[in-house]
Image 1 (cartoon, rainbow, N blue to C red):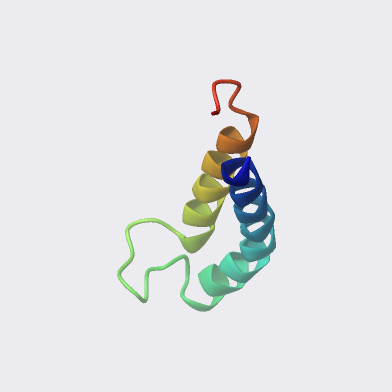
Image 2 (tube, rainbow, N blue to C red):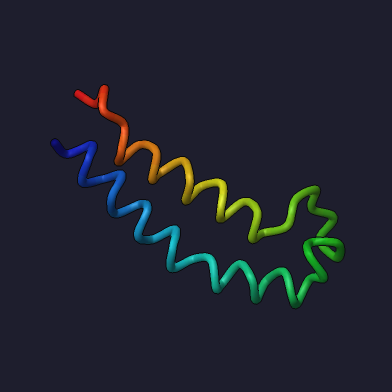
Length: 61
């Protein structure tokens, strides 16, 4: 029960962090200035998808 709540909160927080990631990508030119392999937005979207999958997983205990 608490894992479901935790994943739901993480998914909501991930949705809020996407605009921040977009701003970071704009400022750092997609992470090029910080020598990052993936843009911040791609990382934030991947985390969001992972958390949504955790919420909707039917095999959850």
